[in-house]
Length: 253
Length: 253
Image 1 (cartoon, helix red, strand yellow):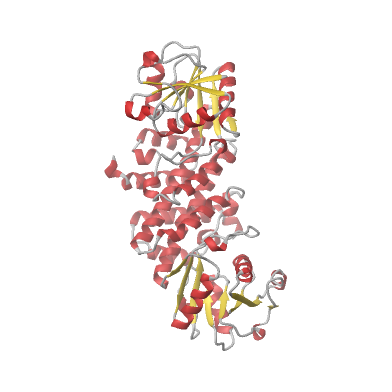
Image 2: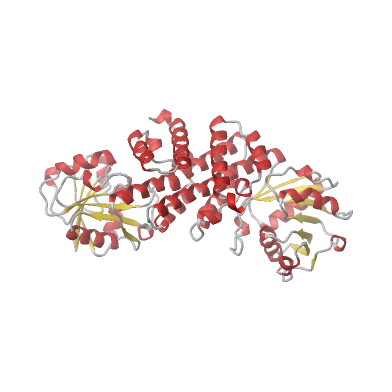
């Protein structure tokens, strides 16, 4: 049985604790966190502690903390036999200075209180020793059926790519909500379209799924849209993205 | 029973024919199209014709043709008792010159061969007479349980908003696919994230769902990402969108 100590008491830690606790081959030995109030909710899953010196021995120490706290927290950990692992897409493995180190990066956005199916979440792992890698593979396979080995450099590119796929697309959904608000249109009307846009690329390539005035090279519609936009930022974004789409599909026109 | 003649043989016409045919209170009387090959696939739903002069009488003439062909096709139609209706989000109602006119705009993206649940698609309607509006309400209620009355001006803003929500976000998914391709990362890894991004805003407001370096004001991560980007266009988009998100969430920082 692979034993895990989870460090952190935020949103990701909550989802991880629940998933590890529910997995047959994994033992959640302890949860460490600094915030006593947030930590209490973990008592259903494992013994809790807010003291570094009370942390017990385990195969894996899973750090679900903000990027800036990873190195510092890892350095404070007592001498262990286990592997120290962070969960960040943006940070290299070597921000952890300990002998046995690794990364366990779940590529998903987690919402507080919204249950997720961990089995469907791709996990990217990296480790600096063979034994650590074996442990991480075991952990990842116990939680997900999509496990990928990815080095720090590839992972940082993946994280950049996730910013476009998630953060930036969500911001565009926000612009569409804002345009609706300004014109007294219920945002409800656009929600099924947003969902279908994401469902489409579950099987199609986004390049092939592209539609709209810019792909068709329909400058007349583009001009009409630009006249409808009242915000300078939105006009800049509309222009930049339309030109990029046009260039991308130029050969078809 | 409300009778409908459908004009067009493309992707949207296919989905509409199927939905009208399957609806209890609606009668698909005829399908008109110029392309005989495309038109043949409609024979399971209704009698077909490729001759304008053979078009029969009906309550509604539903034009599922490209924006540029609406006015021309409507003008060619024989004198009818029915209402001439187009299905475009981008075009005003009055591009149709006939006495009884209207708009039936399904706010969704349709993929060839991919079945859709028409009941979940919001339909925006507009008409120039009370009787035409009643007919359109009947048609829309026979196909969907989300029906909205929207004037031409509001509809054009909705269409603009849909370009951000659908076309532009799909293009960002394409950038993330391209970054993956360049770095030998399977795009598979990002698909669950894309789906969850869209699922999140089915209940949350995109403004509240916003995450990422720009929302946190994490200039260090932003700088690192900019160094990873190898394409000028992608760098421009990254910078413009990050600055916009930062400005949008400034008060929280």
